[in-house]
Length: 134
Image 1 (tube, rainbow, N blue to C red):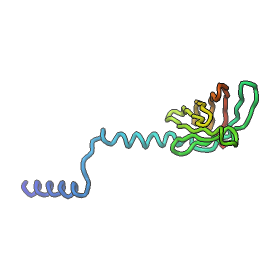
Image 2 (image 1 turned 180 degrees about the horizontal axis):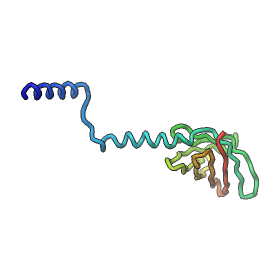
Image 3 (image 1 turned 90 degrees about the vertical axis):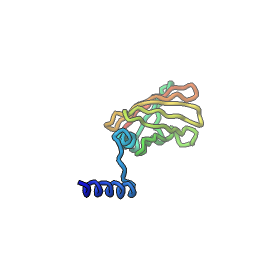
Image 4 (image 1 turned 135 degrees about the horizontal axis):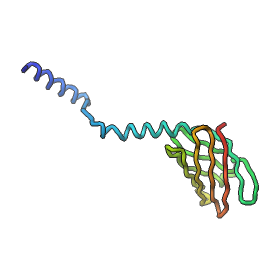
C-alpha cells in the first residue's frame, strides 16, 4: 500500500511539474465555445456577388462583399473607398455592418446555403441587397 501511495504522489508531482494539471469541464468550456463559434461562422466565409437597390429603384452590383473565416464581413458598395463597410457575422448567420466614412449602418443574414440578404441605411437613404456566394 505504501509503495502505491509513493508512486501515486511521485506521478502527481512529475505531472504537475510538466504543466499537467487537472481542469474542470467548466474551465474548458470557453475554449470549446470559442472553437465552436469559429467553426459555425466559417461556414459563411467566401466572396459574394451582391446586388442592391435604393429608394429610387436604381439597381447596382456591390464592388465587393466578403466574409473571412473568422466571421469578419467587409467590402464596398462601389470602388471609391468612401462606401467601404465592415462588420461581424454571428453564429446564427445574422450580421451587422458599419460604413465608417459615411456614418451608415446595415444588417442582414446568411442562410447557410450560400445566400445573403440585408438592408443598409446610409445618409438617410435605405438600400436593400441580396446575393449568393461566388
